[in-house]
Image (cartoon, rainbow, N blue to C red; front, side):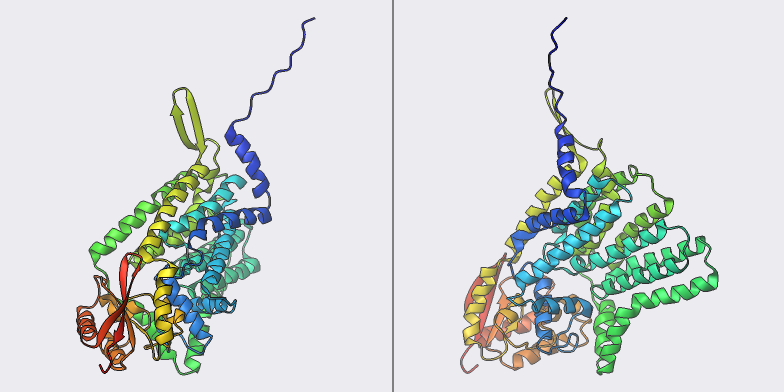
Amino acid sequence: MRQLRLVEPDRAPWTVRLAAAARTWIASPARLAALLLLVAVAARAAQFGNPVVQVDDEFYLLTGDRMLHGALPYVDIWDRKPVGLFLIYAAIRLLGGAGVLQYQIVATLFVVATALVVARIARNLSGPHGAAAAGVVYILYLGMFGGEGGQSPVFYNLFVALAAWTMIGLVRRPGFGAFGFAGGLAAMLLIGVAMQVKYTALFEGLFFGLALLWFGRRRGTGRWALAAMALAWVGAALLPTLAAWAWYAAIGHGDAFVQANFLSILDRGSDGIGIAFKRLAWMTLCLVPLGLAAWLGRGMARPVSDDVRRLLDGWAIAAIGGVLLFGTYFDHYALPLIAPLCVLAAAWFGDGAAGLVLASGRTRWRIPAGLAMMVLITFVSLQIVNDNRRARGWGPQVERMADFIRPQLRDCLYVFDGEPVLYRLTDSCLPTRWPFPSHLTLTRESRALGTDPMAEVARIMAARPEFVVASTRPDRDLSPEVLAYMTRLLQRDYTPALAVPVGNRNRIVYRRRPGA
């Protein structure tokens, strides 16, 4: 008899072992949420505590803060964003502290919740690994487009994703009837809430509304019944906006609400075709990896009904169409595209045969598709976030200006060309209804404000503010008339009191000369 010899079995490939280890984290929604929270904190921590992450965030926080002291958006502080966004920031200010870290933590929680919904939707097309990867990639991709702070899509993407999830639930059920009507109301109300954070959610809402009509008709709902349902769905989508408008009208400021929320959008100028095209080209280049993954994922998805596939494809197309139609193409305008594209890419992320193969001699390594995308986007987005920090600045820079101004301030500071966060850091009163500097200074805004910007700047300076903040390198789109006026006045009546580099610009704090 031959002696038996135990043979050690071949070790499983590292990708199989990694998938097995990851299964512990993705087996339940609670553990997946914990994983997504860890990823979000790691991806966004570099900007935690920075008050100048993005100039829009600074202004939203300023507006939310002043709302708690009685200021009314559109009346006391002008902007074209919906009031729902400012209510979010006002609620954040109730958490106490300086507000900066608080809004960034709340934004991170919104990101995690959205990523979890993305993962749940993606389970219709992929297994748990691909769905979890879709949620992780959603978090990481935000940094590609300035979403590391509190931009409006960081908040409203959650409501749009919840509406999409609701729609998937309707489509997967047989029939339509009362459940379809009620689910449609819920989805449209979620879109309505999203529109009160930013109106661009309208485009996804239009698609979901048309999808409801199509599914309802296909599943036997009569024309008149469907027409009545459609009126109710439209009402649900418009309810938050109509409620805000009605409240402003009731207190006598309905005209201010309409001018800021709707007319100003139509009257806003353009930066020019060349600049817009460059922004769109950069946006497209950054979206190429995720777009390719979404396209490949469509061919790898698990069997799913044609209705579900059409709905998810349509969601992505509607989001893309909204970006293209809205124009201007600032980087953060791409943020609404990330959620639907991650859902479509989930099947490719989770496919065992998909990935990147690296070879050296006889050795070959295969990196799974989802992991390869995570590594790529982490590297690129961190570079972009670091570039943003270098270009926009960091807390100690603006705090140095605030510490210089605050003890000497006796009237309203005027930030002509600088960071609006200085109003909050110095506890200054606001010298104008238009405290966001670009509104009064950029040419493209000159017809959208409901006032003559040159006349408003002259009125501010006629009040002889003690301190004015300006820049040694003005924006190239600065109104020549406004710039010439301010340059002449600052040279005549003011003296430079402090120069501070903030990011890639030098800010000058001007102090009024005695007797001037």
